[in-house]
Length: 68
Image 1: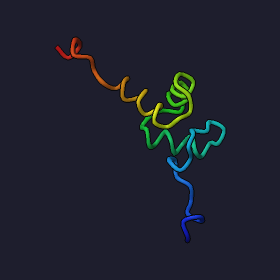
Image 2: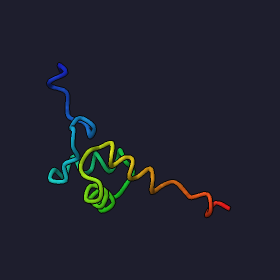
Image 3: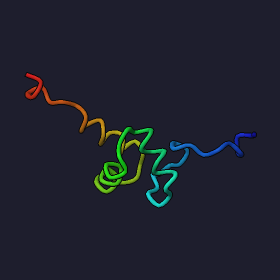
Image 4: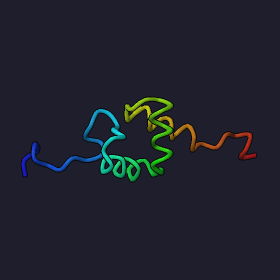
């Protein structure tokens, strides 16, 4: 296969599409989230992959006050 014939990956697109079930599954696997979490993230910050990653990174960090 040439580069133009390679199968698409979750990161191939410039935006996260919630309309394509296969793409949603790939993004969920890549970001280690559920479909509902992915949809909430895209709703909150938009469909740019970097923004969605940052959204999850912020939510997965435990604040120092909680860690004790």
